[in-house]
Length: 420
Image (cartoon, rainbow, N blue to C red; front, side, top):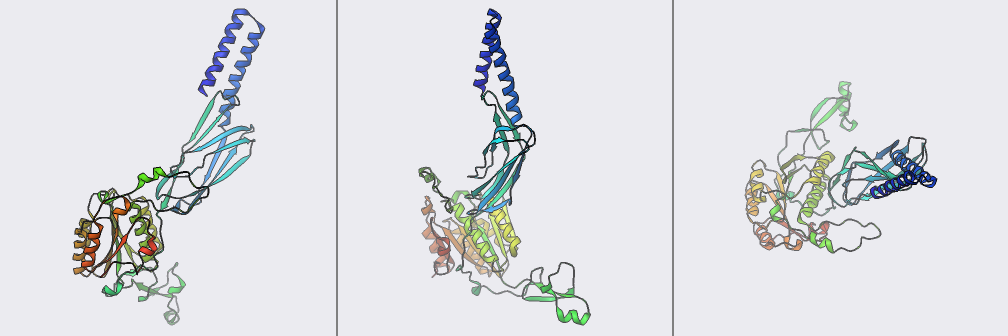
C-alpha cells in the first residue's frame, strides 16, 4: 500500500511540473485527476474502518480438549455509506482458532455475521482477541487499520477418559470412624435436625418432626466416614520426557477434523490421568484432593461434588511441568499432614525409588497408596522404569505402568495392575 501511494504521489508531482513548465491543458487535467484520486482514496479507506461495531459472542468461556469451542461475530455498519470490504483480523491465542474474516459489500445500517467452531486440542488459558479492522480504497493506495483492544479468555480443561474399572483398594484401608463434620451434601449419616431455612432442599425435610412440631424441620448430615483420596502429580521438569520433535514430520492436516490425541509427553499424560482420576472418584462421591509442585505449590484440599471437579480442572488446565522438587520430597513433606483413612495415588515418570520408600513410610501410618508410573522410555527418554515397578511390587504397593499411546481406560483397569 505504501508503494502504491508513493507512485501516485510521484505521478501527481510529474503532472504538476509538466503543467507548470508547459502550460498544457492535458497536464493540468491529469494533475487534477490524480489529486482527486488520492484525496478520495484516502477518505474512502478511512471511512471503511469507521462507524463499524463488532459484537463478539462467546457462549462459554470454558471448554475441554476434544470438545468444540464456538464463537459468533456480528459486524454492524452504523453509517449510511456502504463499506466496500473490511477485513476483521482476530489475534486470539487459542490454537487452530481461525476467526478472521473478510466482509464484502456491507451496505449502510446492515449487519453481517459468521460463526467459528474450533476443536480444542491443547489445554490452557488462552486470550480471545484483540480484533483489528483493516480496509483500503478501490485503487489500493491507502490502508487503514482500527484496533479494538477488548479481550477475553477461554480456559480449556485437560482431556479426561472414563476409568470404570480403576480399583482403589478401599477394602485394605481402615474404613475410618465417624467424621463429625457437617456438610451441605445429602449423605447417609444424619447428625440431627434443625429448623427449615429458605434454600433447603425438600429432600432434607424430616416429615415426622415436621408433623410433631407443626413447622418445617430438616435433617443435617455429616460426611461419610470413607477415606479421602489424594492425587500427587509429579511436575518436576527434570524427570519429564516427550517426543514433540516428531511433530515436525507430520504431513498435511486431515480434511475432516479428528478427535485429538494426547500429546506424546509425560506431562500431558500425567495431567490427563490426574483429571480422569479426579472425575472418577468425585463421580463416586469420594472426597478428592490434589498436590502438585509446579510454578508454585498447588494444593487443593479434599472435597466432593461438581464444584471440586471444577477446581481440579481449572488447576490442571494451566499447570506446567516446571517444578524443581522431586516427588519423594513432596510425599514426605505433604504426607505429614495426612491422617489415617486416606488413599494416596502417585502419578509420576520418575525412576527414583526413593519416592517408593516415602510411600512405604506412609503405609506404616495407615495410609495406603497406589503408584502410576509413566514409562519415560516410550516417550523418548531414558529411565529405569522397571526398577521402580519392581520396588513397588516388592513393597506390596499396587502399581500401573503407562506407555505412550496406551488406552488409559484399559491400562488403568483393575485387571492390569502390577502386583504380587
